[in-house]
Image 1 (cartoon, helix red, strand yellow):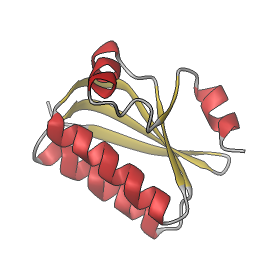
Image 2 (image 1 turned 180 degrees about the vertical axis):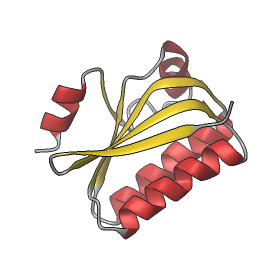
Image 3 (image 1 turned 90 degrees about the horizontal axis):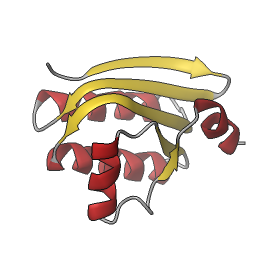
Length: 114
């Protein structure tokens, strides 16, 4: 199963619900294209909901970092929501957990953009 993305607006925050596997190839390029598209449309507040991500590889982690960088460089903010234990462990091992603003609740994550 590859990655599925569902983009929705909650106020002025764009929430991207990600499900499946973020891996080299289709999964990471779908995520990259979605983030690039949002930045291109001027979206400044992006929340990636990773609650249904079953697996992420180093390429997927690279896409998260690249997405974070492109959103930040365009003057926006990218935050992460609902990390699975596996993704959370991976971000801690790679020392990226401190780079991202990570939330467990969508309500508190959306509030944090204010």
